[in-house]
Image (spheres, rainbow, N blue to C red):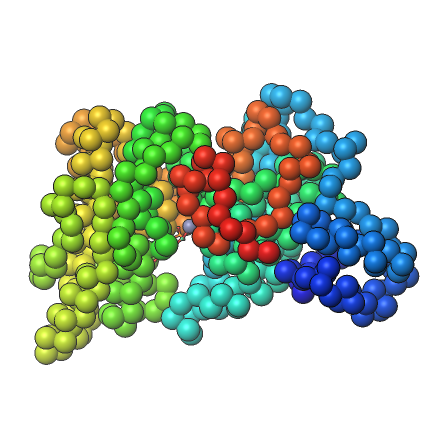
Length: 428
Ligand code: KG4
Ligand code: ZN
């Protein structure tokens, strides 16, 4: 059960409760709070909860079903400026942002769970969800205060619906759904990678469509052709580890603290990239796919061969490993531009913050008369702004009705499938 204070009220969400099968499930909670319960909200009432609501009705709280009241359709007619709240909780960063379709980004706030997971050397899903529960609302209040806006002014609530950690995603979904209901505003679920993919458009000047996008994060490494919002074609992707994952695993081999990517990049600055020649996996494969899992093993083998692993040795290994990843990424980006006959490359995702990658892509693209666009480093990693912004691009002209507001998450969700309007099996 997930309980969240919303404003002065309390939203209690019974995730995955099989209410129809166990109608007594709510008895204790209702007993304890009978006089104070004003309404029961059955999000997902198509899942059988609505039926069960009839039985609980004896307890006398008002049943508000998930079939949103028709009179509360969103007021904003087409083209009217919208104030969009973005909520990101897919992994280990709690992010919120406020985006005005006319004035741009009005506020953003982020809480990173890096310290929370550091002792474990990686993200612990259960700790991540609990921390999102703790952080999300205070962060939201702080961000609104700084932006000098009130929550009632929000026209549309957007949240990361997937892919990501199921429990972590559910926290964002529950808060978004609760806010939508409390405010009488529609709620939209955004694909996390679409957020990353469109975030470079927040740069000034924004790149124009069409372009090739390199999505490089901890969970994904993909090259996509982007012809417009919602028009994405997958050109190639990693066959095993993502580039960020390779950075993180190699960092562990080098004894660096979590999160490894940025730490490895910092160490690499002091190293000699020509000291070791690591393989450039699939660089000549002729396709646009990647493979990074072998690199970590290559580094590990070299570490075992070295007589000493002092600071200089580690820095050289880090620089040589980084050079291998960067070479492969840059070569495939150039190939993608050539294949698609495009002159614009856009980089998104956490690894896009890597300085050596930026340098190489700038060099390679300018050598062939193309351009490359990077979002500012703070927008490369997970954040709420990209979610609000993606919602602005997708729904800014015509927000959906509240009836369509979702309350489910998709921990595994293919972007191309999402763009076609498809969804994978939801986690409820
Ligand atoms: O996009 P992101 O914040 O989260 C995911 O959706 O995965 O990306 C996080 C990944 C991590 O693997 C992290 O180590 C990597 O991006 N990363 C970097 C750098 N900054 C973040 N990798 C290399 N160099 C960096 N400067
Ligand atoms: Zn991400």
